[in-house]
Amino acid sequence: MNRLPKIGFAIAVLFVIVDQAVKLWITGPLGLHNLGDSRYFLPIFNLQYVANRGVSLGLLHADTETMRWGLVLLTGVIAAGVLYWMFNEKNRQDQFALGMVLGGALGNIIDRIRLGYVIDYADLHFGGWQPFLVFNLGDAFITMGVLVLLVRALLVRDKSRARASVENSNA
Image 1: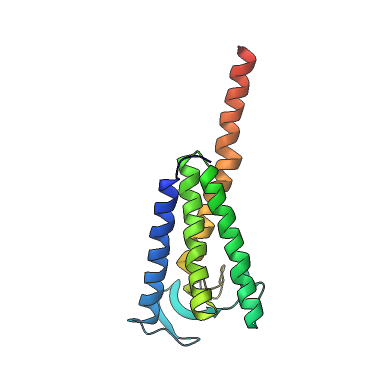
Image 2 (image 1 turned 90 degrees about the vertical axis):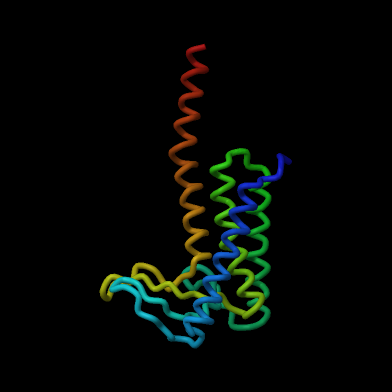
């Protein structure tokens, strides 16, 4: 194993704290704690309380305690895999992205353990068109981290491999 991935850990811890703080603000001072409670912010953005008992896109809906803890276990295994990858990743940008994914996942795991569901609240819409389900910052962190990893894997690393291949053929 490589040295401790400090940037990944720092980002994960920071993002868990931000995720949980925003959820406390939503359910505390803003008073959104009942299903359907909402606050208008912008013509394209509302805060709306949703108790998400499933995972991404409402899949794997956990209607029983067994299913709830199964989702905790499943997301915990995925988070452990991300942590393992982070320990073995040398690139700091990838560690940063993995920290985003880990932080978002841990924030949602904390909700599921504490409440039995994940608090979602961000409702982005354009008139009647809603391109996303209601989500939370943890979901956004996971999505952004995965997108960074995909872009780097598909675009950035291919260029460096191609450059190395050209250099090796010229040698």
